[in-house]
Image (cartoon, rainbow, N blue to C red; front, side, top):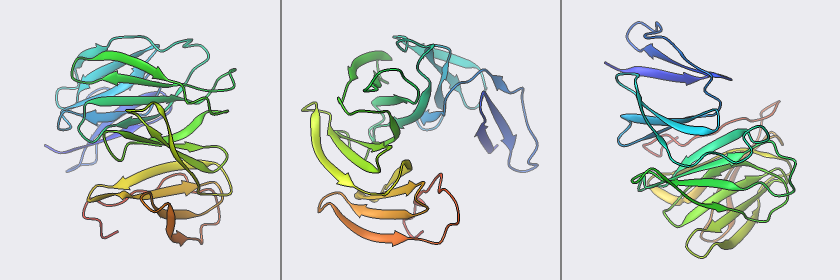
Length: 220
């Protein structure tokens, strides 16, 4: 069958697309957005201070990623990104008493923790996305997008994308140089991260734009 999986503040629910009715009990106390891995048969989300895995078909636990989130009382997982080759998972923190919030990372093949990415950038990352296996895009409260070189462990480029906090980012699968950003400044923009230029600006929303996505076919 086909299902729709939804994520609320602290739960995950699964719905049958032929009846739009909920099937199986909800997963409670899930404290973060979730991400599909391994051909969408598994998904990963935060439960307490651990990143847990579930089988999307059977709805049963499927293990966990080794290595707890540091200071779980202070940190709240905000966004999740998976590398295009589905070998790495990245998780940001949205609440912290520190000046710079780290990005947690795991190897999805071995399910072990990788070194924490500390960009040294003040404030926390509002959104992250991985356009390639070596680059991580980090959306900031300042409206900037930082392109982090994973192999070099340093900033590759910084793009002044918006006049307010970036709420969401995504990349076109057919051309990962095309980055889509949404912001509290009520705009959506497409950027070319090769030339670092603005491709198009969409305006007209009367409120905060919380999310934006390319469709898989790239036409919308």
